[in-house]
Image (cartoon, rainbow, N blue to C red; front, side):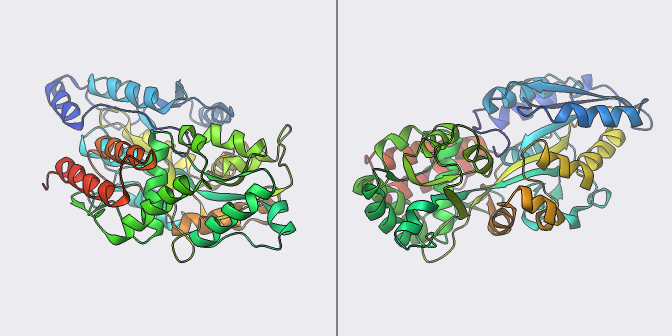
Length: 422
């Protein structure tokens, strides 16, 4: 997740659908006017910015107070608890803060209700983020925070060599192979541990070569292509040639961030939160690094679009109040706080051009560029199975147990079975 740094494993959508049908009769009836108290459920708020926002709402809406429920800050536990509560027929959760990759699954399973697009200022959002909140042409959530991968680089090393940050994979590979060893550094790392981060990194490699994993809301497989082979070959070559260190196979977001901040890497693919952390106390690279959009095969690459969306439970008794609360959390003042207090990238486009915010968050123009070029993860009602298939194939590829050609063919077969097209 962009807002949670590792997406975990859930249950099959089929099970969700069956359970939802069995307890439909037990669902509490909505309030006549759809208004009343709400429960807002989210993963753990690591920066403690949410409670004050909820308190501000409650001061102005005493008849419709919001109770904030924070689940564990690991995504697998958060997702499991959300699904368990919704499948039970409970109306306890009204508003859910969900990873953008979960939107299609929750919508297909009937766990969240469709929303009226006219109720929200969607035209004020960065264009690609709205696509993450739709499924089969309908809006099922409202974008809340966004994210896109960036390439962090040691500016001092490149400047000393008279080099610019790489715009293509060939440039990145050359610099990682030749410059990094001169300074006792490893060349490049991303998130290659077999978890959601590996799905993201592999998907970005495929997209940055012009390929895709799935098409048409997950109903057609698109991975069997020369572009997908080129993307996987880029990563496989890095490990074979050594400019991607073997230890990167154990990296998630935090471990790769720590390696970069410890001064062990020339290049790192990671999310925008690293920019602030790497300039903090204790970082050996503070003031000595920069960030640019991800490189690709022949030019700028294409990041996976991360972040989270706000959805309303299909069992909420107060959907009218819930819609108001979604509009509040995505309003300009609150979105500003999301950035300044929560250290999370907002979805409102105007904030990326705000001189005061750019002065305090210099990466915003680069992040805006990356978000506008980003593509959501594969949309599928069976996204969890899709992600696990990508991880399994990717793990074998990076461990050199499969060639890029073998990996693409196997992944195409497994995705066809998941999508029901085999």
